[in-house]
Length: 503
Image (cartoon, rainbow, N blue to C red; front, side):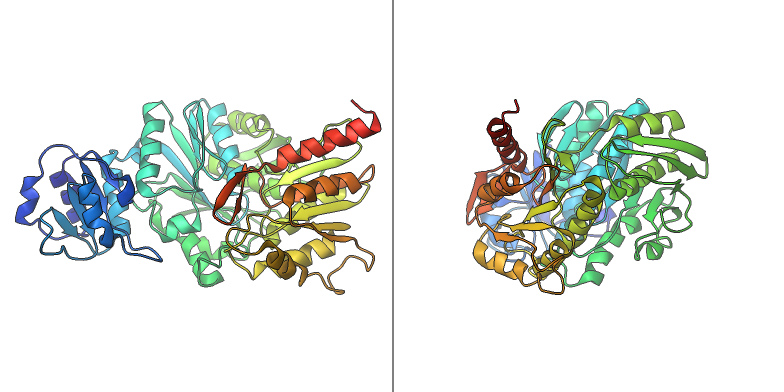
């Protein structure tokens, strides 16, 4: 697109006024839309965003030096910078609008399913994608674990990328034949308007529990961010709402086509009798279109909700029942989500999970407890430079529901890991401990903590390694170091096999 066409799109959305005379100097197609002055390439439009620490307008000159041919900012142009400059009312919204225009609105050429909530987004998105694939509709995935574009899997930089990155990925999916995309939509992305110019075919609300309060002012602000997904939906797009969550009912009035699901209360989509084992799940699902059978290798009550959410999407979008059943059954697991690392021949079970909030840890422990005849040993920590208030809450959950606790580092970032551990331990009191004799170990080195937990496990015990899940790194200070919970756990299990003579 040309600069004139992009400006016209901004005027259409009432973000900018009439062009100035200098705009006529820009001719020919725009190379791209940039929001980081260090990444500007020749021929780009640079959108200056206001961040928490700096205003991107201060880097406009640097962007021009790097080749930017036009600037978009909430601030007026300085008199001595002779470059096309659009002063807009909201730079973040302008970035979303320009990115959609630059990549020719790919979300209008496919069915994009937005999944938001605190827990369950990743597994729900994977289930949705599996169902679409079973219906012979190639489906991309954007989320915490990875970006799947056609047959290619790429490492995820963030759960929901910035608007130009999202639009570029969606355009690639369309060009590679994808008819749908299952996309995790984070509260950060909704607050920062990264998806404002997209057309969603459906929106899913999984649940809302305490998280990200280092970014959002309070739980109400966090909820309002999630709510924005449903405010963005077209009138013909269904909203899939978990009614068992206390916030769910409030969302049923936002979208024009609410479809509800629940386990514990009446809803449009509900399960039949449930039973849980390490072999997976097998239950009926009642829907407005009739009954279907869910058979899945996924484990535990949280995954019942994830399956109900994905099935609700498929039912609301009129996908065939046989595809829904095959799609649910085809997904055997998600990296770092109740990922069984141990083998059947191991005398202890080891599970790696991404649980990094008190509610997610509670769900993990509730899932794990019925699946073992032995003790539950929990290894976990909390991230540095993030919401500190959840640390004692996670400690309290571990204290009440674990037999052995091993507190360690997560991603300490710029904080002292020993201080983080101390704050977690404040939640483990006489009132919250499972028993006065409950073993409690504090081991700062995460690798050593995982090795120790598996070493002290007795036959029949279940070791849970929580907090990092699929991540393959650890952030300590300014360094991002290779680290893999799954790999370390496998190493520890191999040591046990060698020492016990089991090959």
